[in-house]
Length: 491
Image 1 (cartoon, helix red, strand yellow):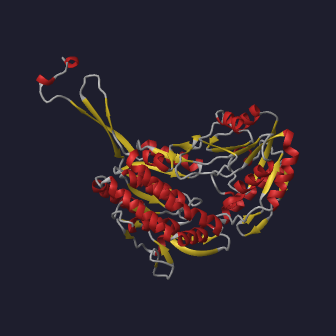
Image 2 (cartoon, rainbow, N blue to C red; image 1 turned 90 degrees about the vertical axis):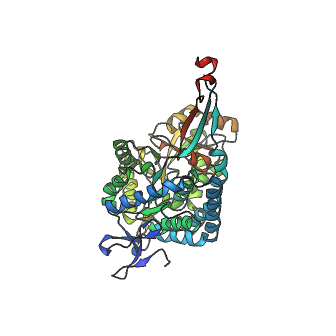
Image 3 (cartoon, rainbow, N blue to C red; image 1 turned 45 degrees about the vertical axis):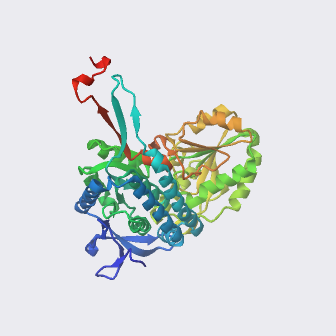
């Protein structure tokens, strides 16, 4: 496959953990099969790290930080630009890896792979202004300087659904700030995550500055705690589900380690009565089915004003009939679980406005839109992570806002209207970190920020906002060198 794999004693291709710039060779008993869910076959294997190996990884990052933090900003800037150049030549390779491991469509993976150079360059471009310190006034007339310094070695726990863009964002920002990294790769796409790690090392970042481990799911709690509890670890970034985020938050609090989190949501798309209904319908379907509905920004709830619902429903059915290819779920288990939630909703009284719930492959099922969703079904309050969304009808803008804000999450919401002032006014009342007007709920810009509100996490990502998450402030105050130099306020 590539230099990023090796063959174990049984002849299996294995994606290794990587510590201090070198791949780790472990007994084949530690291997995890990585499946192509759409084809029900094993693609290759990853390694399941032990807690001891995880501790080695963070120790390596901690040791590397001692010297890397003193690397001139300009040097880190040029290494990031080199990483961007390398990623630009490897767009096809990155896309192929993501599609192979996650069953995403090639179109989706190519789009993501093409964003990586932009992410690196945006963060590199933001470095020199984001890392500027200050000289602040004092009450005594002395001098006080504020430095922005890297927090230290950080743990990035990254998901499989944004397998290229999200780790690229985290690694780039941490390195830009002067931090070193342990990437806890997803066991579902280690080959894709390894692609990024080897690229940053190829760009000149030193051994130990970017390390990678992975673990079998049942061993993940012990492996993760081994890193969080290590004295070298300074901060954690987690992107994933809210239930896992809560578990990580508990462990982080136990050791007083700060955390950035980007968690899930039931991203609503609001259709006002003056909206371009055709565009709203088309964008709603596209936002729902992308990556088989497995995006934290994916559209799962439509809120439509009753005055235009009949016309909108007609356009929604037409848009679903022409929905773009959506790939398959990342695992058969995830597909079965999600389809079970759809079937439960229908059994309890929900109706199909468009589409149906039928298997189309070993890990994929037909997209659909539901109406009359009962409040006691799972999908009503929770993220479905599947190509199914439901509609809620309202009369007024105020009712639309109340419905949008009624769930625990607050990651992304969209408002469709031909009156920008109306859309902007509504955005001020929406409890979401990201509000789009006439754009899909999964709209993200490399300059950022992406911010989760409420139960969707805390902290921001992309551009300078990512860098700021990995720096802390140091105040250095200067007093006079002798009592003869005391100012009047000090006497």
